[in-house]
Each structure stands twice: as C-alpha cells, then as structure tokens.
Image: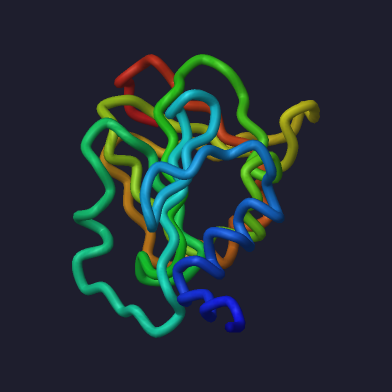
Amino acid sequence: PPPPAKTALEQQIAEQLRRAPGGQIINDRQISYDNGAVIVTVTAAEEISTTALNDCPAGWFCLWAGTSYKGNRYQFRDEGYWQDLDRYGLPWFYSLYNRRNHRVFLKEYVDWWTDERCLSAGTRLSNTTSIRHLRAIYLGKSNNPC
C-alpha cells in the first residue's frame, strides 16, 4: 500500500528541519535547537489560535512568523550572546513578545556593528513589519528599561 499522507503538522516539522537542520523533534509540534535553548512550535496553516500570545512561556522571548501572534513560534531563553535567526530557519518575524524580566536587543546581523533596537521586559508587538528584517537577537541580563 502507498505510505500514508503526511499531516499538515508533519509537513511543517519537515519544512522546518529542511530550513534549519540539526533540530531535535520533541513532540508532534515542537523542535528543539541548542539543547533546548531554542524551541520552535509549528502550527498548521488552518489553525487559528486566540491565545497564542499567552502561549509564550514566562521567561522566554517569542517571535511569530505571522502577525497577531499567529503561525510558527520561535522562542529563545539563552542570555548573553548574539543569536542569528537565520540559523533557526525563521524567514521573517511579524510579531513578538518579550516575556522575560530582562531586555532584548535586535539588530540586522550578528557580526555587524549597527544600530540596535531595544525591547524592554514585557514588550509585545502584534505587527513588526517595520523591523522584521532584523536578523540577530541578544537576550540581555539586565532589567533596566530601554
């Protein structure tokens, strides 16, 4: 018999691993990178969540592939160094939530000395179209406001 068709979630998992190899599948919706420091949660295209913002765990910085906290979620927790979003296969991000008690910085590239955008603890943006091009994040260790 022919192999069973992949579900929408299986297709999303496969696509994420194609874009960013090296992840470990945690369950039918999540992939872990860097020993759990980065978690990608996939959603099927037909899924609409009204609680996506609240799904960002406390202590994490979350980026979504869609506006209004929809689409695949990329969550980060490691502090103290610049992380390249391209490494985790995030094409663009269109919403974010800094659910940490510390600042987060964004800039164009890890290795470039460019202007940084600072996000204070608790910052949430449902439409980041104007900053979606920023490709590097730094999770600060300070809770000073920006």
